[in-house]
Each structure stands twice: as C-alpha cells, then as structure tokens.
Image (cartoon, rainbow, N blue to C red):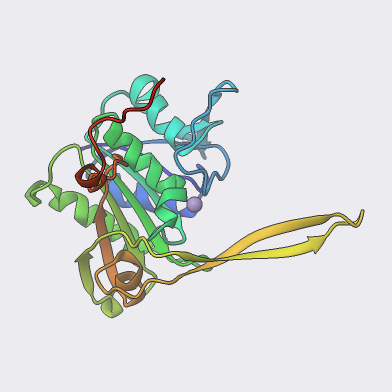
Amino acid sequence: MKILITNDDGIYADGLCGLYFALREEHEVYIVAPEVERSAVGHAITIHYPLRVREVRRGKHFWGYAVSGTPADCVKLALYELIGPVDLVISGINRGPNVGINVLYSGTVSAATEAKILGYNGIAVSIDAFEQIDYCFAAYFVSKFAQNLKGLPLEEPFCLNINIPHLNPHQIKGIKIVRQSTAKLREIFEKRLDLHGKIYYWQGAEEHTEEDEDTDVIALKKGYITITPLHFDLTLYSAFKTLPKSLNIDL
Ligand code: MN
C-alpha cells in the first residue's frame, strides 16, 4: 500500500518514527507532519499565514516534509501537492490517549478525519501513556491491522480511531469495537498570579466521568485496544423527529 503518515506531536516525535519503521518493510510510506507539536488543535486549518514546507533528513536519508501548519493542513497539502493520492493515511502514534470528548480536540484524530473528508481512508492511533513510552507493540499492532484491513467489511472511505493500552502485549485483554464516550470531562483550572500580580490560568488534567463499558474510555481503561469508526457529519438526526420542516418567522 501507499501510506501517508502524519501526527500532531510533530515530525520529530518518537511515535511517528515507530510507526514509520513498522510499516516501511511492506509499504511505500511517506511522512508529512507538523514541524512542531500541534496537539489539541482539533480540526484547525491555517488560512491567515502561508504554509511553509521543509525537507527533513535523518542522517543521509530524506525523512519527510515538515509543514508549518496543523495536522489537517498536512493531510490536505500532502494529498493535493506533495505526495498525491494514497491508499491510507495513518496519524500517530500519538503520545496520550484520544478517547471520549477529547476526540474533538485531537489533532491526531482530525488528520484521519481530514483523510475521510477528502475521500481517503484514515486511521488515528494513540497510546495510553505520556511518559517513558514504548511504542514497539503499538507500531506492530498498526502494521498487523493494516495487513488485515482488506478482510474487514468497511465502507470506504473509513475513519478509524484506535487507542492502544500501554501494557505488555500479554496483558492486553483483546480488541473492542466501541462507541466514542460522550460523557463530560472533569475540567480543572489552576489559577495563578504572574510577576505583575495579574491572574492567569492553567487548563489541565481532565478526568472522564464515563461508566458505560461499551465506550472507548472504559474499554481502554480495562486494557482493551479500542477501535471506533468515526464520521464528520455533526447533524443531530433525532432532532428532525421533533422539529418542523420549516419555521414561519416574518423576515
Ligand atoms: Mn499529540
């Protein structure tokens, strides 16, 4: 397969490197990724600044294109200008999970969603850890999963959000296909004073309030690899049952 890989942790991130080396034996792999970390930018695109592209080398070899934009910018630019059509876009492996409401804030997931918007297959991959991460198993899992894609009854283009526990392979309980949790996050703001006596805030560590077993949040917490098929249509279809077809308001 011809595969584009990108991420939101930046072109120098270990997770992207692990993914590349797990895939390159069997696939034609291209890297187009943000030049710096752009985590939590969601589906932002860059329209008020130019997009600069720089060729990055590792040792003597060309590594990939670093883009001065967001993950969604990278996918657009890669597919339209830098690489052209591919069979699959993989975003990751992200440092930290992307489950529940955080899926909406995730740059990693948005890169995979952007692929689907443009008519390509996309996969977002994240690992459930932030420190001292071993990406080996997660990268191995993605390569195995990519090999097995053809056997899956997926409507194309698909967008899959995969989260992998940071456990030894024998401790992983299995693979669950689950819905995205929509439970609230417990938001935490830390209020501080700067040197001039002015108040500022740090927005940080959130916790999911989910309890339903059949969600990405809980399945991941219990040690399962989770796979959630995603769509970008935000329409609330159930509202059509109660809302009238049109409104009579004098305009
Ligand atoms: Mn990230």
